[in-house]
Image (cartoon, rainbow, N blue to C red; front, side, top):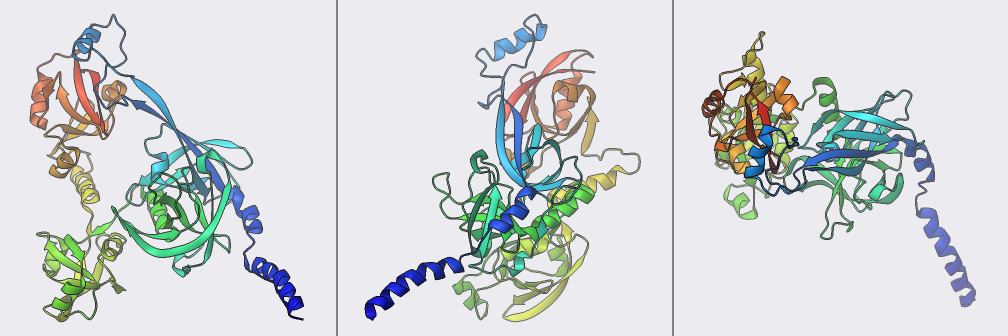
Length: 463
């Protein structure tokens, strides 16, 4: 009798286990066509990061000038190709993907599961959240359905569809490992952590729940080898959708700021501040004349709630503030001298966006550049901020805000930093104009330009 029972259990157990596993086939059949393969091409100049000779004919009088200064130039340029994924969010061709998938791309090709290919253009991208919105010219395209990532539960089944290593429409499955993860240098995204297999090429692809709803965008992995190690992270779709809406309507993303430097509340700090547990964000510095300063927030305050939302840890505050529209009011609940207080704060705009907004306002209807910006030689120029100089490790230079006419034809781009004119260092706007003023109209000068991590010489004819 015992032997028969054991045999019965051996037969029953596999069937029971199989019955509990989800069946993804219907989901994949319906949602697979909404996922696209994205391939990009980028022309990379001077990959070694050294100044290089521009493409000039040997009989060009300026060729000898460059040859003397750079006797052993490396390769001038090559084409870099990369792969990623995305998903269609509207029938007329709007697609969500990662910003790093389409960053600096000269050409973007989108391939559907029915083998149709389209050229895409970037509507906008946001490097802080790694979200990009691109557009293809199509109609009646299959689209995804959005889910609510806030209703996701740890342990819930999810699947990813994408193009790992170029293998199009590959499906991988796993569970939600954690929610609200904060990653280094990623202050504005409460990542969804999963153990779904994600590899290079999956970036920008959708993360689905079992209802077939998109709950996230697969963005990055944690790995010591470069390959999947069981830790993948997705951007919650509500965060991505908010970014996409701003990019579609205004072409940029606006974030709030209050002007404080914060740090985590440790167990010891919580005890000293009279907190029942280590939670909230401890204000270590308040920027002078910032929204926080005007609201009366002081160094040593512990922010416990922002606009009615609990600040569990210091990582929560930047996300909550960043998601608040500049100009709006918010109530901040804080602890000071072991007593609870409430203040009302008017949200400011994050520094880089704020600087842009101020310059646009100061231009006025006539479009006149502000005093700290000049338009010369077909370029809109300004001096890099101290933060930019420190980050790029440069002592001077002038920043190109826009390039048109002869400057654009010469190859100068927005974001370039002009470091030298004919090997004479540029330290300020005034000095740049003095250096350029030494040359007659029609003269070609060599501009040493910093572009990303690289530097290159660009021959520029003064007009």
